Image (cartoon, rainbow, N blue to C red; front, side):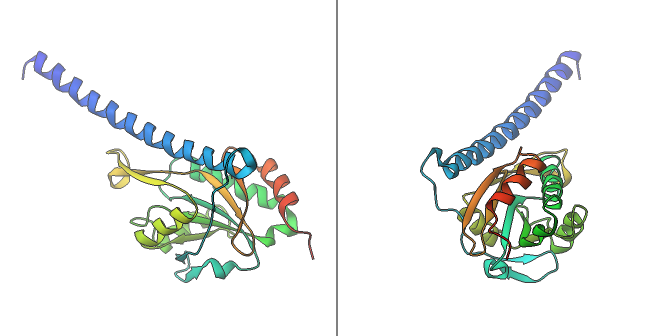
Length: 212
Protein backbone atom coordinates (compact mmCIF):
# COMPACT_ATOMS: atom_id res chain seq x y z
CA UNK A 1 0.00 0.00 0.00
CA UNK A 2 1.37 3.46 -0.96
CA UNK A 3 1.57 6.35 1.47
CA UNK A 4 -1.20 8.09 -0.43
CA UNK A 5 -3.48 5.07 -0.17
CA UNK A 6 -2.64 4.75 3.52
CA UNK A 7 -3.52 8.42 4.12
CA UNK A 8 -6.80 8.03 2.24
CA UNK A 9 -7.71 4.93 4.24
CA UNK A 10 -6.87 6.70 7.50
CA UNK A 11 -8.95 9.71 6.44
CA UNK A 12 -11.95 7.52 5.64
CA UNK A 13 -11.60 5.71 8.98
CA UNK A 14 -11.39 8.99 10.92
CA UNK A 15 -14.32 10.41 8.99
CA UNK A 16 -16.42 7.36 9.79
CA UNK A 17 -15.51 7.65 13.48
CA UNK A 18 -16.38 11.36 13.47
CA UNK A 19 -19.75 10.62 11.87
CA UNK A 20 -20.52 7.99 14.53
CA UNK A 21 -19.56 10.42 17.27
CA UNK A 22 -21.68 13.12 15.68
CA UNK A 23 -24.64 10.76 15.51
CA UNK A 24 -24.25 9.88 19.17
CA UNK A 25 -24.13 13.55 20.15
CA UNK A 26 -27.16 14.33 17.99
CA UNK A 27 -29.21 11.50 19.49
CA UNK A 28 -28.22 12.49 23.00
CA UNK A 29 -29.22 16.07 22.21
CA UNK A 30 -32.62 14.95 20.97
CA UNK A 31 -33.24 13.01 24.18
CA UNK A 32 -32.12 15.91 26.38
CA UNK A 33 -34.23 18.40 24.43
CA UNK A 34 -37.22 16.10 24.84
CA UNK A 35 -36.64 15.90 28.57
CA UNK A 36 -36.28 19.68 28.78
CA UNK A 37 -39.56 20.23 26.90
CA UNK A 38 -41.29 17.74 29.17
CA UNK A 39 -39.95 19.52 32.25
CA UNK A 40 -41.04 22.96 31.01
CA UNK A 41 -44.54 21.67 30.24
CA UNK A 42 -44.89 20.00 33.62
CA UNK A 43 -43.95 23.14 35.55
CA UNK A 44 -46.42 25.28 33.64
CA UNK A 45 -44.48 26.62 30.65
CA UNK A 46 -46.61 24.69 28.19
CA UNK A 47 -49.49 22.27 27.93
CA UNK A 48 -48.74 19.50 30.44
CA UNK A 49 -48.98 16.03 28.89
CA UNK A 50 -50.38 13.06 30.77
CA UNK A 51 -47.40 11.37 32.36
CA UNK A 52 -47.36 7.98 34.05
CA UNK A 53 -49.50 4.89 33.71
CA UNK A 54 -49.72 1.17 34.26
CA UNK A 55 -46.59 -0.95 34.00
CA UNK A 56 -45.53 -4.52 34.80
CA UNK A 57 -41.81 -5.24 35.10
CA UNK A 58 -39.39 -7.37 37.12
CA UNK A 59 -37.45 -5.98 40.04
CA UNK A 60 -33.79 -6.62 40.79
CA UNK A 61 -34.80 -9.46 43.13
CA UNK A 62 -36.47 -11.31 40.24
CA UNK A 63 -40.05 -10.56 41.37
CA UNK A 64 -42.82 -9.25 39.11
CA UNK A 65 -43.98 -5.81 40.19
CA UNK A 66 -46.41 -3.21 38.89
CA UNK A 67 -47.38 0.33 39.79
CA UNK A 68 -49.73 -1.21 42.37
CA UNK A 69 -46.73 -2.68 44.19
CA UNK A 70 -45.89 0.86 45.34
CA UNK A 71 -49.44 2.00 46.08
CA UNK A 72 -49.53 4.49 48.92
CA UNK A 73 -45.86 5.39 48.60
CA UNK A 74 -44.25 8.06 46.49
CA UNK A 75 -41.83 6.87 43.81
CA UNK A 76 -38.91 8.75 42.27
CA UNK A 77 -38.53 7.26 38.79
CA UNK A 78 -35.42 7.44 36.61
CA UNK A 79 -34.77 5.70 33.28
CA UNK A 80 -31.19 4.60 32.59
CA UNK A 81 -28.94 1.56 32.23
CA UNK A 82 -26.04 -0.08 34.01
CA UNK A 83 -23.47 0.51 31.24
CA UNK A 84 -24.12 4.26 31.29
CA UNK A 85 -20.76 5.98 31.65
CA UNK A 86 -21.70 9.31 33.21
CA UNK A 87 -25.21 10.66 33.80
CA UNK A 88 -26.75 7.53 35.37
CA UNK A 89 -24.17 6.98 38.12
CA UNK A 90 -24.11 10.71 38.84
CA UNK A 91 -27.92 10.82 39.09
CA UNK A 92 -28.16 7.80 41.36
CA UNK A 93 -25.45 9.24 43.61
CA UNK A 94 -27.33 12.54 43.77
CA UNK A 95 -30.65 10.84 44.53
CA UNK A 96 -29.03 8.79 47.30
CA UNK A 97 -27.55 11.93 48.86
CA UNK A 98 -30.84 13.84 48.53
CA UNK A 99 -32.87 11.12 50.23
CA UNK A 100 -30.35 10.85 53.04
CA UNK A 101 -30.99 14.53 53.81
CA UNK A 102 -34.67 13.78 54.41
CA UNK A 103 -33.95 11.66 57.46
CA UNK A 104 -36.89 9.41 58.43
CA UNK A 105 -39.04 10.89 55.65
CA UNK A 106 -36.95 9.09 53.04
CA UNK A 107 -38.93 5.98 53.93
CA UNK A 108 -41.94 7.61 52.22
CA UNK A 109 -40.17 7.53 48.83
CA UNK A 110 -39.10 4.53 46.74
CA UNK A 111 -36.42 5.43 44.16
CA UNK A 112 -36.90 3.36 40.98
CA UNK A 113 -34.15 2.82 38.41
CA UNK A 114 -35.83 1.54 35.23
CA UNK A 115 -33.49 -0.06 32.70
CA UNK A 116 -33.73 0.94 29.05
CA UNK A 117 -31.26 -1.83 28.15
CA UNK A 118 -33.03 -5.15 28.82
CA UNK A 119 -30.55 -7.08 26.66
CA UNK A 120 -27.81 -6.59 29.26
CA UNK A 121 -29.65 -5.51 32.39
CA UNK A 122 -30.81 -8.75 33.96
CA UNK A 123 -32.23 -8.61 37.50
CA UNK A 124 -28.89 -9.81 38.88
CA UNK A 125 -26.92 -7.18 36.94
CA UNK A 126 -29.34 -4.48 38.06
CA UNK A 127 -29.12 -5.60 41.69
CA UNK A 128 -25.33 -5.36 41.71
CA UNK A 129 -25.53 -1.92 40.13
CA UNK A 130 -28.17 -0.24 42.30
CA UNK A 131 -26.83 -1.82 45.50
CA UNK A 132 -23.55 -0.01 44.89
CA UNK A 133 -25.41 3.28 45.41
CA UNK A 134 -28.08 2.49 47.99
CA UNK A 135 -30.08 -0.50 49.25
CA UNK A 136 -33.17 1.72 48.92
CA UNK A 137 -33.02 1.89 45.12
CA UNK A 138 -35.22 -0.64 43.33
CA UNK A 139 -34.03 -1.71 39.89
CA UNK A 140 -36.66 -2.60 37.30
CA UNK A 141 -36.19 -4.45 34.02
CA UNK A 142 -38.20 -6.68 31.70
CA UNK A 143 -38.67 -7.50 28.06
CA UNK A 144 -38.30 -4.81 25.42
CA UNK A 145 -42.05 -4.50 24.83
CA UNK A 146 -42.82 -3.91 28.51
CA UNK A 147 -40.04 -1.34 28.86
CA UNK A 148 -41.15 0.45 25.68
CA UNK A 149 -44.67 0.57 27.12
CA UNK A 150 -43.46 2.25 30.31
CA UNK A 151 -41.29 4.65 28.34
CA UNK A 152 -44.33 5.67 26.32
CA UNK A 153 -46.47 6.08 29.44
CA UNK A 154 -43.86 8.40 30.96
CA UNK A 155 -43.18 10.25 27.68
CA UNK A 156 -39.55 9.17 27.93
CA UNK A 157 -37.19 8.20 25.10
CA UNK A 158 -34.43 5.65 24.63
CA UNK A 159 -32.41 4.91 21.51
CA UNK A 160 -29.62 2.43 20.88
CA UNK A 161 -26.66 3.39 18.75
CA UNK A 162 -23.53 1.46 17.81
CA UNK A 163 -20.20 2.31 19.39
CA UNK A 164 -17.29 -0.01 18.73
CA UNK A 165 -15.53 1.14 21.91
CA UNK A 166 -18.45 0.27 24.20
CA UNK A 167 -19.16 -3.14 25.76
CA UNK A 168 -21.11 -5.27 23.28
CA UNK A 169 -20.63 -2.55 20.68
CA UNK A 170 -23.39 -0.13 21.64
CA UNK A 171 -24.56 2.58 24.02
CA UNK A 172 -28.03 3.89 24.87
CA UNK A 173 -29.19 7.48 24.53
CA UNK A 174 -32.07 8.15 26.89
CA UNK A 175 -34.17 10.85 28.51
CA UNK A 176 -32.62 12.11 31.70
CA UNK A 177 -35.20 13.47 34.11
CA UNK A 178 -36.54 12.41 37.53
CA UNK A 179 -40.28 11.82 37.92
CA UNK A 180 -41.87 12.16 41.35
CA UNK A 181 -45.08 10.10 41.40
CA UNK A 182 -47.57 10.04 44.24
CA UNK A 183 -49.04 7.00 45.97
CA UNK A 184 -51.55 6.55 43.14
CA UNK A 185 -48.83 6.74 40.45
CA UNK A 186 -49.82 10.27 39.41
CA UNK A 187 -47.18 12.83 38.51
CA UNK A 188 -46.36 15.29 41.28
CA UNK A 189 -43.32 16.97 39.76
CA UNK A 190 -40.29 16.58 37.52
CA UNK A 191 -36.72 17.25 38.58
CA UNK A 192 -34.03 18.28 36.07
CA UNK A 193 -31.12 15.89 36.09
CA UNK A 194 -28.65 18.69 36.86
CA UNK A 195 -30.35 19.53 40.18
CA UNK A 196 -28.06 18.94 43.14
CA UNK A 197 -28.87 16.89 46.23
CA UNK A 198 -29.77 19.94 48.30
CA UNK A 199 -32.23 21.24 45.70
CA UNK A 200 -33.90 17.85 45.32
CA UNK A 201 -34.18 17.33 49.07
CA UNK A 202 -35.66 20.80 49.62
CA UNK A 203 -38.29 20.30 46.92
CA UNK A 204 -39.17 16.84 48.19
CA UNK A 205 -39.83 18.26 51.67
CA UNK A 206 -42.26 20.74 50.15
CA UNK A 207 -43.95 18.21 47.86
CA UNK A 208 -44.42 15.31 50.23
CA UNK A 209 -47.72 15.24 52.16
CA UNK A 210 -47.52 16.09 55.87
CA UNK A 211 -46.16 13.26 57.98
CA UNK A 212 -48.86 11.32 59.74
